[in-house]
Every structure is written in structure tokens, then in C-alpha cells.
Length: 121
Length: 138
Image (cartoon, rainbow over all chains, first blue to last red; front, side, top):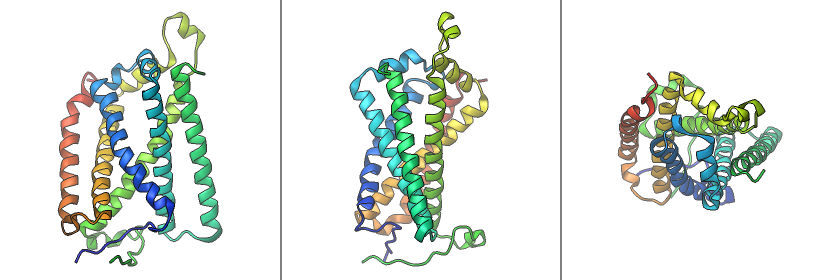
């Protein structure tokens, strides 16, 4: 019989959020790669092209949602990997706080960049 | 019914010979995950430095963003790193789909096969992407 093992606690909201963001990210990451490497080749990307894409509210909101979900999924994954390695007590709380702070800064800076590309800022 | 067990630490590299397909899947999923979150921070940092305005460039009808990206794309190493990034992303996606299936209780008896399938499909996609990524750099 196959054994089931997961480092995540099923009762945790983060366990559910990790999987919900995973489902979204499967599509968003694949879309991002295909659009910016295969449809538009990276070597041919220009600010004008990026600005035109970011001018569309649907694309802009998709990119910001992509940023937020990727930041959560990645940092929550890092946190769980560290907890899985035995992180506990004060160290666990400090690492959690640092990762939350890093996530807030990443999303803040990324949103600022997206709005700069869009011309809003 | 779920159960947990102590797998020891990954840092004990001497254990790699004992790893099963499931352990390799676990190691590779963590490894690709660390790379992807590291890349996300790098990506936002590079884009942040490229969205400024340089008056001299504006007068020359150029912009920092386009110049930065095109300068990076002229480097052969960047093109190879892009193939690496695609491979990492594709494996993480495919193995992630596999993990979601495991969570849903689908195909539990075929976990080894689906891991090998994820690796094989990642390799095929990475090889197929080479002409696109290396196009025009040499």
C-alpha cells in the first residue's frame, strides 16, 4: 500500500492556500513563460511592448495576482521546508516574521514596477 | 490512512544511494522550489533597476528597460540559464501536478511512474526549447 506523506498539516489554512495557489500558478507560470519566451522572444522584448501589455487591466491584474500567489507559495514553501528541518521556538517565529516581511516587500516592489510599466506611476 | 516517518536530514548526503523515487521527487521539488523563489526576487530586482528614466536615453529615443533586456539577451550564459530556468519551472509544475493528484488520492500506486514521467517530459520540453532560447545569440 502506498504511503502518504506530507510536510504540511492538513488542518492549517496555509496547507489549503499552498494547494490553491499551486493550481493557479500552474496556469499562470506556464502562460508567462510561453508568452514572454515563445510567442514574444525575450531578446525582442521592448518597453513599448511591455507597456502595451500592462495597459490592459486584465493582464496587469493577472500579473499582480501572479506575483502575490507566487510570493506566498514560494515563501510558505521555504517556511515549511525549514520547519520540516526542525526549526522551532523563537527561531521559527523570527524566520516566519522575516519571510512575511520579505514577502510584503517583494509584493510592494513588484506592484510598484507593474504600475510603472503601466504608466500609472 | 496517512502516516508520517522520520526521513532524517537531507544534508546527510551519504544517504543518497538509499533514496527511492519518492525521495528524489521530494529533493528535486524542494531544490526547484528554492531556485524559483530565488529567481522571483532576482526578477523583480532586475525589472526594478530597468524601469527608471534616463534623460540622455530619452533624447536618444532609447530606454533603460529595452537596453537592459537586450544587453542581457546578448549574453550566451543568460540564454543557457533561461533553458535551466525553464527546466526547473517545468519540473516543478509537473511534479506539483503529481503532488496534487497524490493529495486527491489519485494514482497512489503509480507515484514512481508519474515521477519518472515528469522527469522525461521535462527533458523533452527542455531539449525542444533549445532552438528558441539559443536563436540569434551566436
